[in-house]
Length: 630
Ligand code: PRX
Image (cartoon, rainbow, N blue to C red):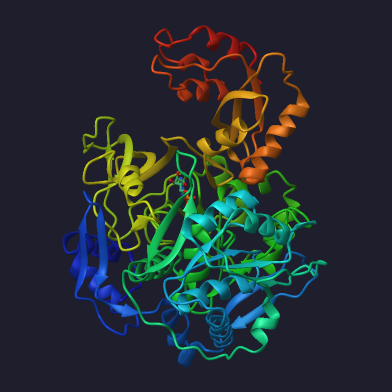
C-alpha cells in the first residue's frame, strides 16, 4: 500500500481501513520500509497495564531507513541544509552520501568511547549539523539518545543525566544565539559536578571559546579524525528504545518519555509525508530546536525517512532583524515551512516591510505546532506569508504521541482557522465529560482522549512505568488521556482549547508549574508560592507567580529579580515569571490544596467567574489578591 495519500477520498479510505483493521493497514504501510526481519504481529496492547507493542518481532535500524536505503537513488541529493546563526556565515549542504559517512563516522567515535546498544547518551548541543549527526549516530549503534534542549540550566541537565543514567555527554564549547553567545561548556561542567553517571564528555568546537578540557573530556574533532567512515548499523528489535525525551509534568520531576524504534519510524515518516505533501525536490523547513519532539520527528527522522531536504536553523527569528525567517525562506527557496504560533505572533509585530521585501513565492505549505493558533495569527500567516495560496496545517500532537495526531493534509483535507481539524490515520480521538462519559454528539466540548494505540505512542516513562500509567491511563479507564481540552464542531473537526492540568504552554514550551514553584520555594525569604499561566499576546501564555514572604521581608524589584534568577538556574530562562505578586495568603481548600483555578482567573483578569469561594479555608485572601493584582 502506497504511503502517500493524494486525495480527500483516499484520506477517508485510509482512515476507515486503519480503524476497521489496524493490523492489516499498518502492516501494509510498514512494508514501505527496510527491515532485516518482518514482524510477527502488528499491534498488541492493553491500556490497563499499560503495555503497547507495535511490529513485535521485527528487526532493523532507523538509520538504514533514513540513510542507506536512499543512497542508490538520491545519494547526491541534499539531506540537510544548515543555516547558521549569522547570515554572513556560509550555509552548509550535506548530501545523503555525506550524511551517511558522517553518521557512520560519529557512530564509530561513540563505539570507540565504549558506547554500545542500549546505553543512554545525553546531547546538550547547539543547533548545528553535528547535533543531527550525533542523534543518528546513537541510533546507528542502537544507543538511546536523550537530547536536552540547550536552553536548560545545569541543574535541569544534571537531573536528566542522572534520571537516564547517561554514560556519555555530547556538548559544545558554546552556542551562538542571535547576538549572544551561551557558555554551554561551563553549564555542562556544573551539571557534571551535580550528576554521577557520565564517564566521557565529547566537546564540539563551535564558538572557539578559550576552554580547557579536564580528565575524561575530549575534543569532537580529535575523535572524529581517526574514526572510520563505515559503520554497519546495529540491528535492533522493533520495541527497543530509540530515544528518551523529557517533558514537563504536573509534579516537579520531568518525565523521560521513551520512544521505541519501529512504530515511531513508520508513523513519523507517514505523517511527515502526508501532512506536508512533500514532493521530491522540495526544501522543507521546521524552525523548532532538535531539543524538542518537533525537532526529533520533523527535522530529523520524518524528513530523512522520506528522502527530503530538511533545513536546520541555528539562529533565532529576530536576529539580525525580525525578517530573518523570510530571508531564509527566500535564500533556500523553502517549500514547506513549519513553525510555532508564538513565533508568528512575535514576527507580526515587526514592520510588514520585513516580510514583503523577500520573495516568498517558493512556499507551498505552512504549518503550525505547539499551542493553539489564535484567529488573528492564523490570518496574518495566511495572508502575509502564504499570500492566501498556501494551505495551513495546524498540527496537534505531543512529546508523548511522537507524531502528529490531529491535522489536515495540506491541500487535501479541508482547513479551518484555529482548528487542527481531523484525526490522522489510525488516530481515534474521543471527547469525555468530567465524569469520564463519552460525548457522542456534535458540536461538543470536553477532555480529549485517544481510545486506541497508534504506532508512535511513547511506551513508558523511563524508570517509572507506574507514573506513566497514572498520568495517561488512569483518568479515563482504557483510554490515553492527553491532558488537553478540545471542541468538536458539527463536521467532527477538532479545535484544541489548551491544557486542563497544571502545565502551561509558554512560547510553545510545555512547562509544569510545580517545578517552577519548587524553584521559587528554595528562596530563603519565601514561605510559599503558586504559579499559574495567563494569556499573553506573543507568548500565548505567560507565568504569574503569587508569592508569600516571611514577616519583615520587603517584596521589591530586587527580590523579583532574585526569584527569576533562581528559576533560570534551576530550570532555564524559558521558565521565568513575567509577573510576580507578593501576597499574604493563597486561596486554599479545606484540605489545604491551593486553588490554582481561582488564581488563574485572577491572573487572566476574569474576576466575574471566580465561582463559589465561600467554601475556601481563607476566602478573605482572594479580595486582597484581587485588589493588588498586577
Ligand atoms: O497542549 C497541547 C499543545 O502542546 C502540548 C504538547 O506539548 P509538547 O509535548 O511540548 O509538544 C509540542 C509539540 C508537538 C499539547 O498537549 N499543542 C501542541 N500542538 C498544538 C497544541 N495545542 C493546540 N494546537 C496545536 N496544534
